[in-house]
Length: 195
Image (cartoon, rainbow, N blue to C red; front, side, top):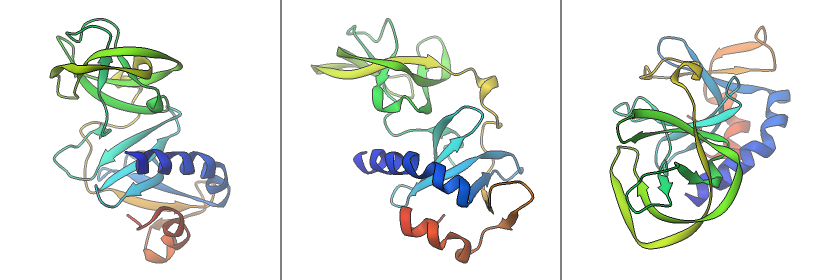
């Protein structure tokens, strides 16, 4: 979790430099643009992508069984002991879109708002809709979980695998097509193994 957050911080700081030098664009198997590659966790096979139209990042697990945007800690927190009331999320996810299942609402997509506060969390809901009362309620820095309507997600879900990667130098007419190992050398030096 800490390594993912550190990777995200590095990516945000380096994004302006990457965009001037070039970017790695990610497309699904149906050639839909998903986003710009920010990083990859080699151990868990998770990609972090920046989605320009959302101005947010998403995490995508490359295991085809998920076929969705996700995040390891997509837990919704609550002030109540029964997961009722306002949906809250850890403030580190302000710039990320993730999904969760909430009672009577089915699968929804959320992001964190820009205003955070210290709140005593008494229960959490996991991404599959299960509610857990906290054994020891915890004070956390959280923000309101704001729903992102499915229609605002600019690519179809479920995702179509495998993905295709393309290196571009700043505009659509200066792209190299599918990436080979040589195109990823500079990127790999910053983020670890290439996709």
